[in-house]
Image 1: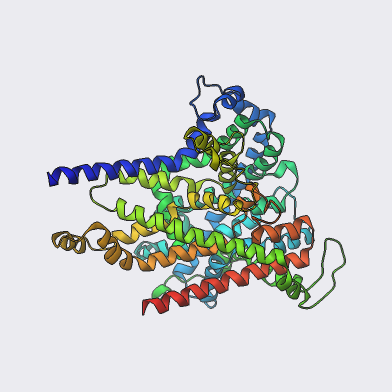
Image 2: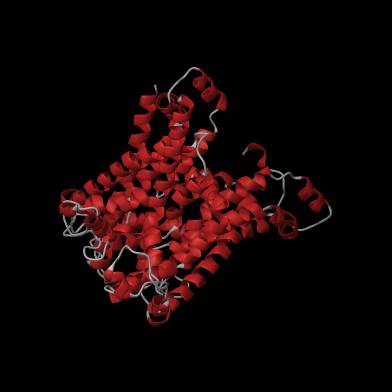
Length: 277
Length: 295
């Protein structure tokens, strides 16, 4: 009897957990299935599942609502940022992990300080600085802060990883007269693949989602990223709920796809970064 | 850090390895830190005129009602997150680390999912859920017969600050959960086995073993929550913009409004520095308090 009760208890709390998890993603699920309803269907019953599925809202949002323009600039910003973050994080991480030079500890603590600073409090002075240099509102404006913000975490990921790599391979290469560049490219970089993919995914997510810098530093429509684009889109389609929902799903889609494939890596990387900061 | 020196690289190469990244970093993070201090001592609005006015901005800041309202709202958000989000996360950690729990990976993945969404998307999702006519929240309340609870969630000055806190608790629940769970994995299984033999109840285990043993991780999670919630901006911007009136105004939104809507860049810089200093003090205070508690 007691055994039976215990089994029942286990069932109950497993079901409770399942319900809780479902409740956690229910807002996302609601937006997703509502986005394939027609506006009329949605307004008649906002809870029910779609009776027929149609993708016209997506067409309206992406083409007519010009969300594709924001996708282009977000993609551009993200690709360039991720590339440079990885490049700089790798070179600086290598130098800090492998060389002893004057100022090494200073540079190290400079980056550590950057992880602890509330970066978004720097928006006002950065805006003034970029405006003064006439570097605001250009196609490259956002890339500059984006690289800088993502750099410390990625750099520490590389640095601590390279530290665990045994030296023998490099020493052999240097003995044979290989240059630093050659050794880094042919020997270290391939070993760093796992940490490179973590850094890449994290930099991608952060850059794709970033809002405050994008809001303040560029005002030109054609340089606006997806999150900022969404805010002006919302102003235009305030009452077209289903179109708005389609726009939300579209802008979250790249992130969700990446998450489905790499969630273990993302969860690990994000918590490692969070605890370090 | 001691035995780091092994590879000998000449100065020029070393410079090339470090300088480009470091320069961008200094340009974005280090320099503005100092210029912000400078601007905060001027009466600069957009335009060429910039007058040095000493600490006048800071004096004004201390008397600024909106600033204190914003700070109060930030603190409400911080407390709600620390109490509710950490509480739920701890409760879930206890449940999820039980060996009778099925589909642990699934729960973890699902609960963490909102963390990766952009704050703008989360803001609009909740905007729609709260919507008076077509929001699912009011529709559900109507469906279960709780019509008297229906209200314009984001338009009522009394409720709005709590209404904007819920999305924050929801979105970042996965962060403390993962931090706690990885800490629990570090606790030796034997402790729990001994407890089970001694007939210790689940609640007692959570209270007297899990909680004290992962207390350091709880501290880390709380600190993270404080520093991110003191700077919360995007969710508020999207959901209410600080309104109605200033009833959901937070510090970052106020700094934004002052600098980029009223275009008072000098005063805006002073607010930014203020945010900086306050979050710093709170984090330090929290560290000190928890250290005392440990003894």
